[in-house]
Image (tube, rainbow over the protein chains, first blue to last red):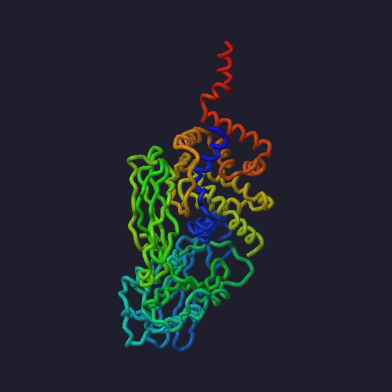
Length: 378
Length: 180
């Protein structure tokens, strides 16, 4: 084997050769990696913990006569990266709409990390009979949902809407917000005052609303200087919360992610068109030697192919089974999707990253909508 | 955030992807690569006063990652797995390779027979594409020493890939036999 050939083969078997920065950042989110690093640093530096005593105070805030006041009661300079066991409480006060005061607890389980378990606090009576019961706000009114008129008929079945909401690709890393035993999905009238170019304006729009909260553990470096956690939490009272809005026929589907505080930094609210993650059907059209196969993949109507994943098992240097998943993304809202023509199949070559044989089994996963919330794929 | 925190955050953000690729190339999955990178940065935090100038940072980080990797592999009793059971995402079609299945098998086999240190040199050269100088920073030796070590590793690799040719031209034993 000469040097040129050696270089070629080495490049060919490089397991990271096609990994773009974007793909890596999607697969291994920066917040998660930083969290892991900080956890390791905290474990290695026990003395650091002794000098930081978090102060968590419970606070309440009442906003107006008809609003639910959300107060993320966090004080102290170490907020999300406290290393001592703490119990955090968010207090929720509700006004005269019959909602009662509840406390949702976030707990520190390991003594080294603080897991945000309830950043979006809601009352159990927020949704009744699939309808929003009282005015609910995020970010002090940037996102508002109010009860629908009693005469308004709810358009679709809850199961289908829930399935669509939890396939929203922007919600990877989130969990559905719970109120009591149920997840918070309700029909209401939505207004979003933030406007972003390219995102339809939502004003008093009848829509399904699903609430989610961030399910990420942050481990952050010791903070000195800057704004205190209390100051930041006042600026981002709904930190960690997100809402998916799916309007009635041909209305927009959007995701609103509230202003958030992560590791002592304030992040702006985000508004985007909701997209849905899909597993696409494919057919194998042939094998290109032992290391590659050719597929025909049908892009989703109105959508696109966004990538693929190959998971393989092998024994004695030979692949025993290969599961190929072709990912697609479509704008969220089924009616729009159905109105688009079915595109022609696209030919793709898949590198198996190993040697297949005649006994290698090729597995096609279930196609259709993927559940992405809470970092799970089903 | 103090100056050290900020600088550390910058180092993490700048080099995380390069180190993740380094990890993916040597371990079998994303999770393993993520652990490797996290542990590497924990070491970096402890040794933050030793961080070299920015243009040498990455190579220094490769050196730390290599040592963390050795510990990980020792702990897990793993061997190199080039077959890489990776679940990966990628887009676009791949160019037709200019080599055969036999070439791949031969190379995998040869790399498998090399010592971990030799293999690391080859990987740093062909995958991370480091120069002698950069490799020296990674390995904690001089540029010249890195060049010599890589040269030896290359020779060993070629001898494993082309055994008959090497035996005929290099083996002193064979030369002695021919003379006699």
